[in-house]
Image 1 (cartoon, rainbow, N blue to C red):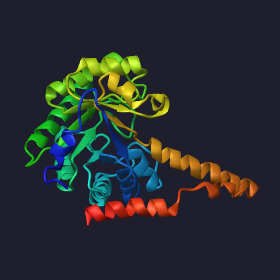
Image 2: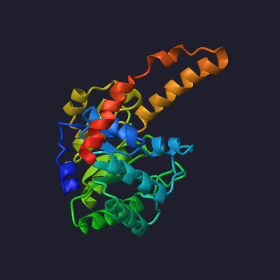
Image 3: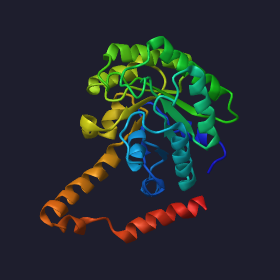
Image 4: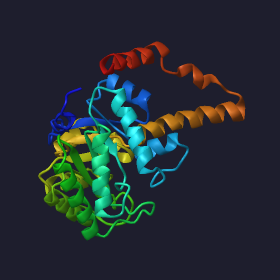
Length: 277
């Protein structure tokens, strides 16, 4: 991997030419996604929590998230970004420390949201800005590039409207955030408003109703990167649910005949093992 993985990651962020940031949940899924052509991998807080038998939102510790992220960094030869919830801290200094620790495990960047976890309620805007300012100061002190994404999650969580989200991401950009993110802003018109409101790269989420939006349509409104969050992990869970219900309720194993080819998976895993060895 290139020495300055952060610079390599930053170069992927181009407004109107979005790359797909593929969220993985273990070394195997990360290697398969990279083998299929993902230019960068991200952790997913929800998908990681599922692997630990826990619900999403505030049920994974910073230490667990760092250990998980480091395993993904070691698994692939592409940049890895951390979905680090609210920075695993309430105060700005704690968020700054999370940035430093994330850098130390080899991540190319992280995203920090403004949610006061485990509650869905947002931090007050002033505190949210202070937290991003502290994170920015920490990134600027690092010895290599590191991409900081500032998230405004209140629309998705039903806590504030689009105008408040835009005010927040504009403030985050002014504070020095490298990329901003309003997950599930409502519709594509709202997504376009977010992109028009800032000059820095914007992340969009391809999940729920936005899963029907194509890469070209995201590009048209100015998106720079497209993440999938926990959507792929949930799709995998859906296969387990549907197949499990058929097995345990009806003794029906027919869905098991439609699995992926073991040889194909083995080949993808091997291709990544070669580049990371």
